[in-house]
Image 1 (cartoon, rainbow, N blue to C red):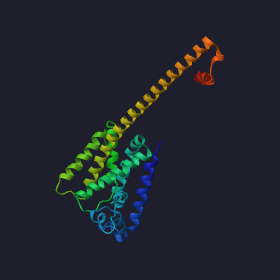
Image 2 (cartoon, rainbow, N blue to C red; image 1 turned 30 degrees about the horizontal axis):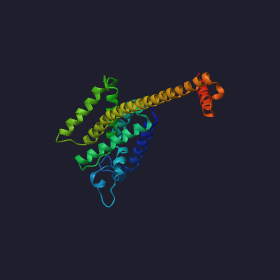
Image 3 (tube, one colour; image 1 turned 30 degrees about the vertical axis):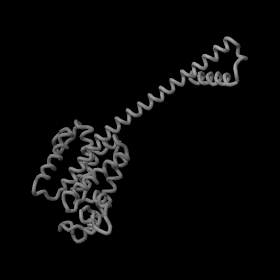
Length: 260
């Protein structure tokens, strides 16, 4: 069925921003480890977000479209492509985007709480998608390099690896806060969606039952009225009916014909 619309749009947007990043890399700045002006304008860091007089909250979204290098970009888009369709099919276009950006934003907030260093990348959002898929389809098969395994074991490996990095005193280059924050958001979102869906179905069933009971009660009351009118016709003749009773019989006849 191809790549779903939300996923395709996100991949195109990330690709466009990645090319813009490359255009700003003048004089081999990236190779020297120096960020470009474009990076500094849109990455996420504590000082910029809290800078006065303008609180640059847009960075909580914009950082998700930046990537540190080609490998970073390719891996994030590959994981989005592998796991995205299954999640998109479950949540739909709008729900998928809410999960994606929600996980990315929450992962960014966790990063800000843990460190003042800047962060770029869609990894927080990707982790949210990946975790949601793993809980939704835990036994789905996947090939990781040359090893065939179930999705739940692959995702568990990634999360445990990030937890170990988080506990390590020498974590460098990878924002485990964004990863783990996105993963947590994906897990909470999954169980929240299922609870909401179950509650929604139960509420809908109750409403349908209530409407059906009211309809059945109304039908019984109308039948009693019609029976009384027919008994009057049997005893006194149709000429004894009032205009209102005639209208009731006419309406009852039309309802019977429409149902039959």
